[in-house]
Length: 104
Image (cartoon, rainbow, N blue to C red; front, top):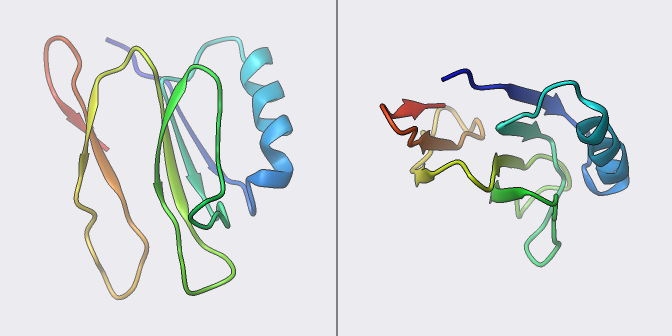
């Protein structure tokens, strides 16, 4: 199984969500997983990318930061507790391909 992963430090995803959607629509191959950093999202703010499930870790007590992992709707996954390392934001999921489990 080949897995296409996109990583993007979006520096605020809400004003750039149309840019992300356009990029995904024009990409030659679909991305099964999209990792976003610096989303700047707060609880109550929505992030909806058609065809993807969204897992988020919002930074509540600072204006910036925040992480999101978008997983194509047909890909099975589970959330895993993030690792705290010197205040660094982290999050993890485990993908559940038919034949194995891959951790990101």
